[in-house]
Length: 213
Image (cartoon, rainbow, N blue to C red):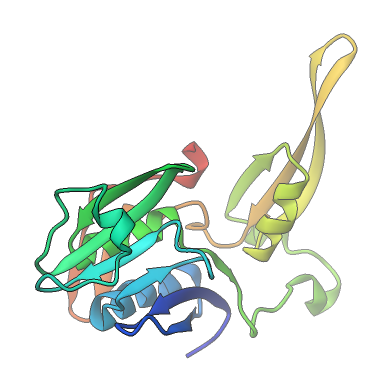
C-alpha cells in the first residue's frame, strides 16, 4: 500500500494501555476508507485523534462494560450499555457532551469532525519534479485569512498560490491567503460520499463540509 497520505489514531485497549495506529493510503479518499474499515473491524475500546487527551473521543460499550471514566457516567443517564460507542466532546471546561453511536456512526463522526489526514512518508512535492509548479493539477481553491492556518493546511497537502489584499475601506484592507490542492475531495468529509468496503457500499447522510464551518 502506498503511503502518500496518513492519519494517526490514538487508542486504548480494555486495560487502558495506549497505542498509536497510523492509517495510510495513496490518496485522501483511500485513507478515509481505510480508517472507516479499521475502526469498524477492530473496534478499539477508545480512540481519538489527540493523545494524551481524553477530553473528547469515542468509548466502546459492550454488555455493560466500558472504560469510560466514572465521572462522565454520572453526568449522562442515557448511555447505551449494548454494543456501540459513546462519543465525548467538551462543550466547555465543565460540561461534557455525550452522544450514543453505533460503531459505524462513530467512525463517520470521527471522520467528519476529527480525522487529521496529512502528508505521508511517500508524499512527493510536485515542484521538485522539473522546477515548475503544475497549476493545471490544482482541483480546489481555498482562501484563509490567518497566517497560522497556512502551516496546518500545508501539512494536509495544500499549496500557497497567492496572497490577495481585499479592501475593506479607503485605508483598510485584509490579507487573504489563496491555497490550492490537487485532490478534489480535500475539502470534503468521508460522510459526504459513499464509502466502499469490498463489494458493498455504505452511504451516510450526516454530511458536513469543512469549507462551510
